[in-house]
Image (cartoon, rainbow, N blue to C red; front, side, top):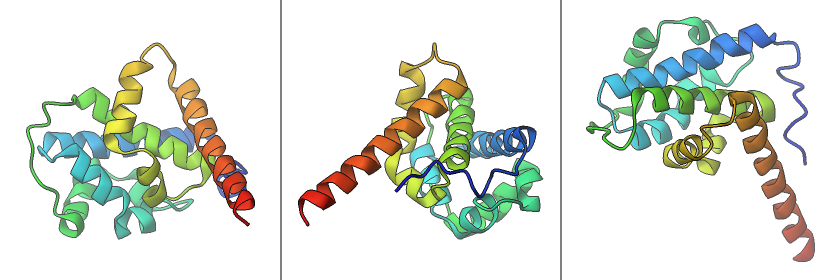
Length: 161
């Protein structure tokens, strides 16, 4: 089964996707500014009802809100733990959030599944090791990796059938 059909987001303009991905990055920066542990925040946020309901759909007014306002709502649901986040930077947090949303647009995989494939640390390490790539190439590379993993899973299931 292919995840790159883009049926759901085919009518969403590139500019709208960019705005929403920027907003997602801003949420991650806000979490960093609040001194939330980014591994804990990412896992719980991506699995939250808020993310499922308002971030994974085609359109929600929440996708165009101020990150601080959204964080107030998110905090009530997930209760993130605090950390000094010495293992990351504000800029890195932005780009991890941005990548999550772009991967979602390209694959249509729900956020709660993307975070199982790519934890905050995994995407963060990917960013550091691919700093010479442009963001579009990173999204393409990560999306192709997901496709290959899904194909391998299907092959294993067929072999075990």
